[in-house]
Each structure stands twice: as structure tokens, then as C-alpha cells.
Image (cartoon, rainbow, N blue to C red; front, side, top):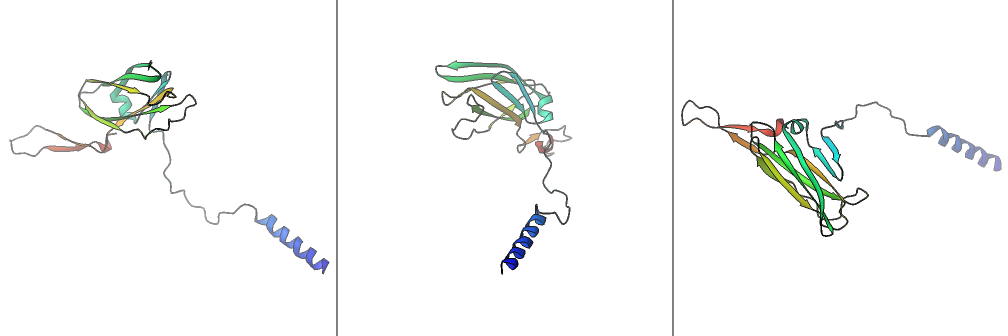
Length: 171
């Protein structure tokens, strides 16, 4: 009886040792999309990190005049968004305040703020931390790609329809 139990235990252990990690029977291509670097980050302003949402946004706009300071016990910053093109751009930005360890502050989710930036124009933005623990800020600027803008084209007659440009493929 002891011999039979010993043999069963031995075979069980050998079977477990051979199974190890699961083997993939059929090699398949991973269906998930590959993550490409779709954004550009500028960390040259100390406690304000600037993130351009795409290569085109990086070429078309300039984030400049970044200043960080305090308003009482709350941190604040200001910066300028400059349109470097000859076209009006639909832009949106989001500010996330971080604590001194780099974690987002536990306040409501930051909203995207949208606006149209006229050709060769500048827009000044400012943000104030909502808690005294706010130490640094992360600013993401991207094209508002779901906005469709009517762009008038040279028309032969007054009754010709305007052309609609979908900015989704441009950003």
C-alpha cells in the first residue's frame, strides 16, 4: 500500500514538473495596436511639463512664456500658445496638477478646454492648483480633431456650397 501511494505521488510530481508554464499551441500575431510615440514632451520649464499631442501640433504651435509662481498657498502658472501657421486651428488643452511626488491631485478629472486659435495669433492661459499640495503641472495641447470647420473656397457663383474640412486626419 505504501509502495502504491509512493508511486502515485512520484507520478503526480513528475506530471506537475513537466507542465510548468503554459505553452502556446498556435502562434498568433498580437491583435492589439502597437503604441507609437504620438506626442512630444518639453520638460525644459522646471515644474511645468508641456506635452504636444501630435507631430503636427508640435510644428504648428509654440508654447512659450511659461511662468510658475504662488498665489498665497496655491501654485499657479501661465503660458502663451502661439499659432505659427497662416490658418485658424481648433485647439484643446488640459491641465493636470501633480503633487511633489508626481502623482495627480485627487480632485475632479481635468476638463479639455477648447478654442479656435486664429492665424498667427497668441492665446494666454493660466491655471491655479486647487489644493496647497499642487507642486507641478502637466499641460497637454492637441488638435480638437472631432471639430469640423467650414472653410470657404473660391466660388464661381454665390450659390456654390462651402467645403467642409475634417481635421481628424490632419492631427
